[in-house]
Image 1 (cartoon, helix red, strand yellow):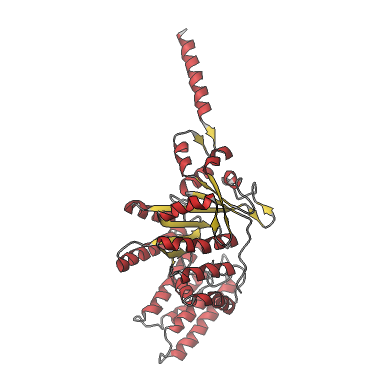
Image 2: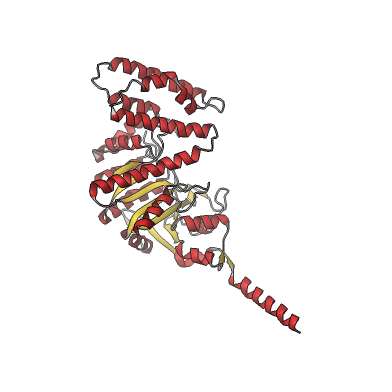
Length: 404
């Protein structure tokens, strides 16, 4: 009799436990789903919801899909909306020296698009082959123009781009205008550029480009011609060598590849953050626009504490609020990506996507339900929920229009 009672009690508890746990699905995100539209400005209940978050935030992170037209349009309007709340810094996934060039080309904001067009044409830009990434679109030029009109500073966090060398060699030459040995330095520059072009043509698994650059006598002879007291030139050279080393690690399949890049981005962010405080007596309010790998709060998909983790740690230290947005595209042109390969773990969120409205899910309330066991989610779903605050599904999207 006693054994029957125990068995019955066990079965009852098992049924109740099974009933209490549910597999994460669309019905669980419905209470936390919101929508807004973007025309001349943001409108709708969803925007009102987000604006309250932005109003109290110190950091806004835009975990983007690169070269998305819609995200650039969103960024353009968002910079306008955030400016009255004290935001005046924009951190981007470009190199520090590239950021300086972008700032110079947008010093007169109304000339930004034309200046960028000239830059990309001068360096014979092609798809995925341009000197500075993620600013090569007409829509990108528009948000940079807005940023500079509103006095945002631009932080370059990343390595200089794979194809940046000819541009940065020219930057080096600009630091020695009027130098007594200018003509000889110019000749060495031409030799170095030709060497870079030769190495690029030979680029393969057997002869990786950036490892070859680091060892090149011709390129190093050119770099050695710049005086150690020429700080502007030395900054460019340091950025180039750091970037070539990071790429060389990647080309060589060296395990230091990802850590070296991530540490470089984190240190660049922290240096800008500290410099702003030293100059202004307060911490900056920063918009960070990067690929969503880098904006994860805890760990990226490949298991690293990236820039988003650093920002979260700073916010925790100073009791600052963070709004972390992760963008996903559902409709790309005439294609619906829902159910397609490469979107595992995102399907439930993508289900809210519409062709003309922006939709998002505030995933923060879901974390406690998963931690308590009330909801069961896959590893991929947990990654989305715990690494970002808002999962934003973009309306029908396409790539930016090339500005060259």
